Image (cartoon, rainbow, N blue to C red; front, side):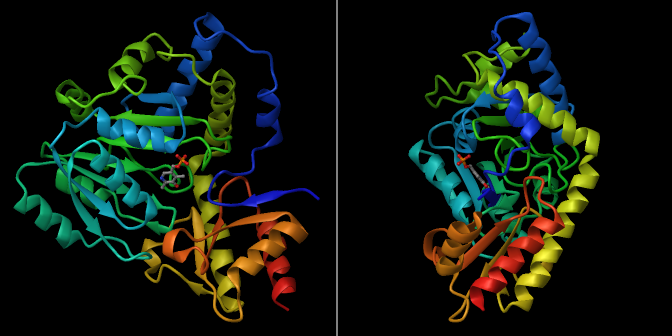
Length: 358
Ligand SMILES: *Cc1c(COP(=O)(O)O)cnc(C)c1O
């Protein structure tokens, strides 16, 4: 039985990419690598839509979330986190570990933020140093409006950090136009790559902030990454094989066209929303404008037992779908639209669910 991932990361990886990972090793201080690394960096700029440099780090997504805190802030700095789910909570936790003063702007799961609250926090806290948010909150499926926050922070000293880990590639994103200062991404979500690489983009405002940060860091010191980046290198031995694969995966995405990838994902998402609600599931995110194209998040009920459905999908069909996180572990089903899935794949998944609940 072939296994298929319908999860919001990691995703299925195309065979051409998996084959590249089996190639002979090359050395990360020699010419062949430099060429590939520079080409990857150039493609990442096109994907993040920025003139600034995008740095590549060997870690999962949480590593670059931590980097965005330890490099841009100091102990005692006041920051606000727009917390609409489990990954928002992660920013709160990391910032707290490093001794920042965190204003936790917590919203109910399945909801996006309220802009008036953010305006109020900014006006009442003239010493606010940063705002953190998710673009796509993967624990719920909410897609937050990033541009509206960038409009508030652009002419201030507030650093806007956005976790675009599950959003990038499959939802439109504009680093420069939306006035984002720091954006963090990971290889295993929209990029059609295995886990292991993370990416971080910095505005000029963020690069200046690096000089003021007093938090401890060694492996995650962004100044070292910036200095090596100029030489087409990483400060330490990177995941060389993944970088080679990433260069090809990004080229393939750009050849296909980000617009096309994004409209395909919206099509998958609408198809799934229609089919799953027809089966009796409720959409978890009620506000249509706040639903992203990364995943479809639905709630089960007495007739639609999510843990049972997931188990049967896995064992009988080889189809992996995600459950909920934290309080929603047993009621939410989260189906990823990432990873080169087709409408036919989604049909197969929906048919399997129909057979299971019959
Ligand atoms: C997957 C994900 C992360 C990072 O998770 P890792 O397991 O560290 O790669 C962070 N934020 C969001 C929104 C995610 O979807």
